[in-house]
Image (cartoon, rainbow, N blue to C red; front, side, top):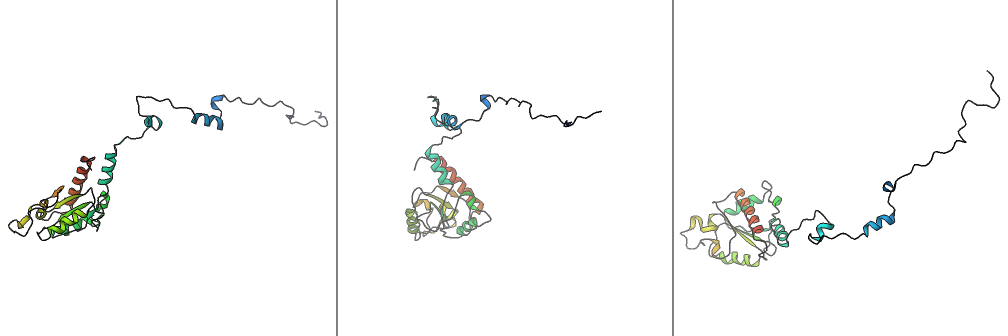
Length: 206
């Protein structure tokens, strides 16, 4: 077999015509900056039977202002650290890490100027009643009162003593009564939860 000089076994493809470019339909082409800007400037069709913010921002929840304020109030209760008698020991135990009141947004505060919950924990004598009333008046509105234990509620075992106030509601309004002598920390936590429910039910009244 003769092989001619200069011939190669490989095929010369340098002169073959190029393949035609693939045509991309307009729907698959990437949008230009002008096209994206035009989409943003396109006016939104308004349905007058539906709220405008629901059409522009779907998923937005409409909530009354009173409900938002009540939710904030119930989730950030600051009880005044004020104890009178043996119920104060149970109140202190409620603030300890074992019960973790902060998970409810309840943080004890030592000043009546910033506190919004007054816990009457213990026996209120007639000599102490003016101080209790003064602390209540120093608290800003809205404010709430929890009567903790039988002594604060109705005098407890000291109902026959003339020097003991037969219920703290004689001098200040009470929102929640926590029974017991003394009540356990779980009972005070239940009283806080009842107060939170009351705040949500009475929203819009402050």
